[in-house]
Image (cartoon, rainbow, N blue to C red):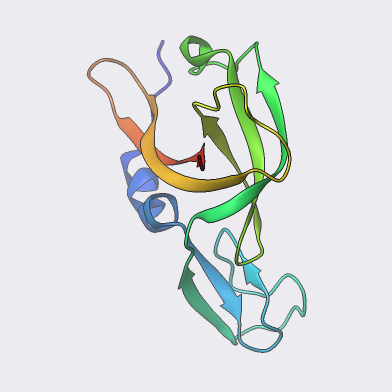
Length: 134
């Protein structure tokens, strides 16, 4: 049986997945992604504002995936990286088309791409991936 997604869950995540929306704590200035109600640094509730991140950053770490989890088998091999956004947060994402010039510290930017699909007639999920700046 194919893996089915929840349409309501997909719609609830649209803001953060499609636009890289996170938060900034007004009290300590920490940026974080994904959105939270409480600052992970100062733990103070109520001084949080929404921020749309630029999508620009650099490769903090990466690994090549040769044996993929269910639903991603046809994409292998592919790169997953931890990206440090220029605003500060570390986020995980796929790195597309690296042309073998991948290394820690390389500049990247977010691109909007297809992530997965449940089946030929199921939900197609889109989101951000990262591309190396030339």
